[in-house]
Length: 620
Image (cartoon, rainbow, N blue to C red; front, side):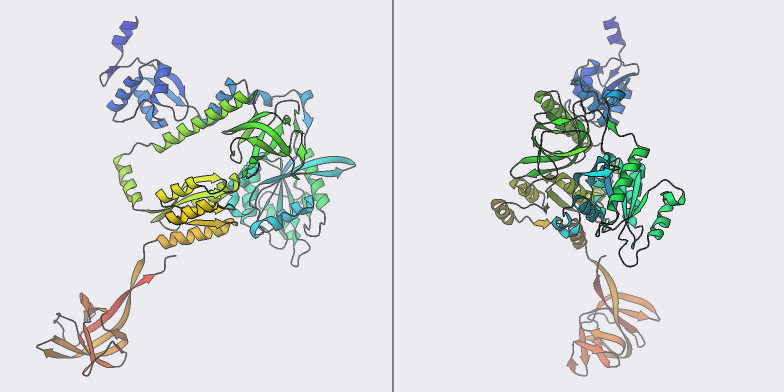
């Protein structure tokens, strides 16, 4: 029967492939023909031949994109489904007996109340960090470059509510507009959002953006109307403006709590914290099981000179202990030490507790989910498989089929001048935010930005080598190279720019993009002269005796002849210019002059000689 089916199997490009009859096959992102061949029990070389027959060249081990697999699947009768990254990760974890979905379905008696996780959002300079300062009684502002928060921090505070001590965890997400990516991530971890609006300033663009983030994440909002002690403060106006965005104050019959505060003076801050707890109690069921393996999210990560990779993580369920094997994205390691926000050592961290974890082998990306693995070996295998998957998916993305239309487009794109950039920063959140905001800069269709490498930590020799090959600029955000690397960069002619405030970097890159634009010129008319007399000379040809009507005639400028208002000849040049018997460089309005236009002699009395020059326009 097998032989009979083989005979019936379709022959494509000279090879027989058993028909799939529409059966579904699941492949991971970035899979190769060898992976497909293994699933359908075919020689990979046969699939290479079939693909070649379909006009597509690929090796058996090359990562392919979804479109290519679908064309191939239709040809050989299989329905090929590419599994999303989330599903693939779920399947990977299930191989190690980790089922996140079943963990979420906890028995009620196992759950214990946990502190709410609060994000402070709002427009830049409306007092978010000052408010957190007042709450924490420490000073973050003075340490931030330019007075702007540039990374996510997490802190826990204790509040006395009706005689009971309750904890609140704060995520300090930056408010500057460059940090949209980080703010969006902050909102995903959040239970309650505090929206800070300055009473003297009202609703601003980032205020609206913060509301949208919170509402799309279905997070209840408590509004803190700040700066009520400032001249021109109008808290009622703020209440009126926010009703347009669906935030109706309780005093107007809505369900959003508004608290008038002064972060500087510390007025009503305790009432704000009470409002947060009351909102969390009323609208949310905040419970988690502390007796299981810890699960949570990486809030921030950076490379520390003495301690290696330091990740700030927020435990969302379970308890994290020293000695646990953890995986965060493609990083893994064992918890060597845990520190709270004040740098004190901790033995264990329960739900809604932010801690700094030491012991990871590499720096995870801010926002990566972290989980405790059964043992070190499992942690390493999960991280390595994720790395391989990520690499394969990137390779598949890079390799695209180029049609003729695409080729024309690529050719047009190749004429675009690209500014290559290498970004190195002190933390993964800052690097991501900087990249995100640089990619949004649009100056013109003629120039573009390409980030060829990004990373956390000091600028290394590899970064300089990469930049010298690709003629890139290195941007160091709060990081510096050592002496040897700086010398190498100087020898190789690689420019390294250092920044500590994100919008300075954005301004500089925008300016250099404008500098890359090809100059544009416009024609500027400089004078008109009327021919009153024509003198004929055997040596010079015809000389026009003119009266300069307006502007200034200069020797060597371009000229055209206007006869009855029509330009007859355009590309002439004033080869000599005389006043009486003297050669002069220029003649101004109201004076007479003799003009010779070189070998051009077709001039008549009454013609107008118009001179013009090309001036460079400043590109905006």
